[in-house]
Amino acid sequence: MTTPLRLGVNIDHVATIRNARGGPRPEPLRAALLAIEAGADGITAHLREDRRHIQDADMERLKASITKPLNFEMAATEQMLDIVTLIRPHAACLVPEKRTERTTEGGLDVLGGRNSLIPFVDQLKRAGIRVSLFIEPSEESISAAVAIGAPVIELHTGAWCHAEEVGDRDLAEKEFARIRHAAAFAASLGLEVHAGHGLDYDTARRISALPQIVELNIGHFLIGEAVFVGLAEAIRQMRLAMDEGRGPGRAGLPS
Image (cartoon, one colour):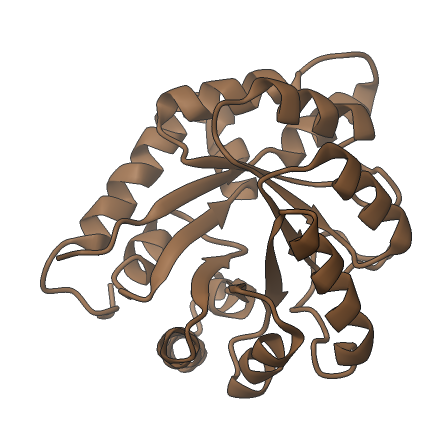
């Protein structure tokens, strides 16, 4: 039996567009509701320390209004812990965060940050929030995630997707092999495995063939496609690509 594959839609960049001009539009909540109607299994939003896109009020409205799980991406800081335990989303994904980056660069430092992350993760779990760690696809990071006590990991797919974008086939195959091995290794340790960052239709189709992965989180590409085809159609096409990749007889073969 094929394991179902969930699609989480990240709506950060709807807020990026709104904030570029100020005012209330486009409304991230409206995008979230439309995404769910089009087939999203959950909504992801990253409340950054500098509030460059999603705002605190956005998170409050999302939690109060959507009918699917809310995945609250956040840095492991005391301020974010206070906010997330007040809002009580379905899930919290801990990610690295630097003010100088355009987008999240690499996975969380679960090796160097292990001692501080253990009590942080414990507090989230005691609040009834599912915890995931956004990490590099390596055995070392996965083993550290187990030691920290997180039940879920999200594998950072950015290096693979970038290699595909620039046409470096050798590097792309090397990076995909890392992801494939990491997914199998994590599942063997009892972790729930998610993946995300930089995925488009083609890369989502391919990674969907990995049976250990149960959720993809995709944002920037879908919001970009929405400019040309509309958000609902972009999500429907992404869902179709994922279903094609998940079909029987596929195992992450080259596209």
